Structures are given as C-alpha cells and as structure tokens.
Length: 347
Image (cartoon, rainbow, N blue to C red; front, side):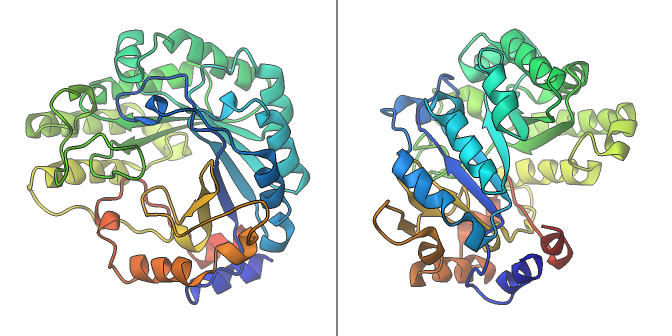
C-alpha cells in the first residue's frame, strides 16, 4: 500500500487516501474573531456517514484521521467515532480548542493518538480577545492533563495583528506545559471558503468592525521581523530539536506574506500537493480537496462510496487545476502541505 501511494503523484486520480480530515460538527464553544462557524446552526455528522467513511479505510489505505470542526469534542459521539477509526488501523488526531480537554480527559486518553490544540495567545487577556472566551488557564490545564496521560500534544497558533508580539510568551507557555510540538501559521485574510463570509467582497483585508482579525500592518511587519530574529536565537535548541515545528526560514516566509498583502512584493509561492494524498469531509458529507479549495462532491450514506467520490471527473479536474497553477486560492495559501515520494513511501 505504501508504494501505491506514489501512484497518486503520477496523475490526478487517487489510488490511496493516506489522510482524511473530518468536520465532525459545525458547532463550537469558542467565539473566535477569525472564524464565523460558531454563528451557524449546529449540525453533527451522522453516524451512518461515519460508518460509510470508516468502511473504506482498508481499501483506501487511510493512515491518519484528523477530527476537526467546529469543535470536534462537541459531537456527542466523538469518542466512539475516534475508536471506530482506530479499529480500522488509523492514527487518530484530535484538533480542538481545548476547552473540554480537562472535562473529557478519560475519553481523550482512551480514544485518540495525538492532540492538536489551538493556542492563540500567550496571556489570558489576548487569548480572550481573540477566542471570545476567558479560558486560557482552562486550556493550559487541559494540555497538561493530556501530557500527564502520555499523549503527544501540539499547540498551533494563528499569528495576526492581535497576538504576534506574544510569540515568545506562547512558546514559553507551551514549553511550561510540556507540549511535544509548537506550530505557527499566518492568519488567512482572503478565503471565503475556509472560515466563513467575514470579509468585504474583492478585498484581502478584514472588515473595519473586526480589527482583531487583521493581518499585520506594514509597521507591524518590521517589529515582527525583529521578534523572529530574537526567537531564532532564544529558542535555538527548540528549533534544532524540531519542537518548534517550522524552521526559522519557514517562519520568515510569513514576513513575505504580510508584505505581499500590502502590495510590497509577491506572495511566497507555496509548495503543496495536499489534494493528492488527502481530502476534507465536511459535516454534511461535502468533499473538498483541502481547507481552501471548493467542494467537488458530496457523500451520502446510500450514495457513492468515498472510494468512488474522490475520483469523479470534477474531483480530478480540481486536482489538475491546482497542480497546473489555475487556482488563484493557492497563491495566497497560509497552510500548504507537501509530501514528496519519500514521504509518501513512509506513509
């Protein structure tokens, strides 16, 4: 099956599907400035659809499953779902805001292999301003509980105007909680698909009444550059060990990105082939090649299986389009994911 993964790179038909991202629910108990999903009526993925997806894992060679949302832990049957996927041989990762980790710690430790926690502030005040809930200490307690239970934890921070100055504090807080990895990505200020309709049409800057989600200003970019230099020296051991996931070089690409938003240079060209080894499945069964590209089909319990749905003409056309540079969304992508032949063989 590992060698079969390489066939995905030959054309636009998928022969395996190593990674599946599932939006278990579009309900959320945060009120984030960078996401509008919490404004929507809550829906949970139906168990019939979960079973349909799980039944294809062996045939598709699924190795990793990322449980997401909304807030995945708000699905009333999320532990059962996680254990169902593990029974199929998948490594199950839980992407969470962390608000329910401490309360549901027994289910977490019994149901998943890895936890990824969104941590968008290094202080309680900044966390509350961005996340809309006063829960910094609660989240950190949850992270410590997971680590005490022996599971790896990655913190993931979306850097933006409101929190970029706290980057060193975020690293220190994560290290104090003994996290396994610390990761950063830039705020997305262009996609209407990934996080909801919160931007002015034909604009790459946020609405004026939502300043906390703004990209860095040009003045901020200079300060951010200095902070990155200080971090590279101060946390050199964490970069060398891989505890900070992104290399200093990759973090500096964020400077290029924020400059480009203000028409000061080109956007950094992302290297990505995620649609050739993964797919996103939304709560209603809608399929997308990745977070930022549009849907290409929909799963239903009694319709086409996942095996068939990922290789429709529309699906393959979308893969061909992004691969040939025809999708403008990819030019501004903030979280590209690339796997070369060697990585796919390891998968």
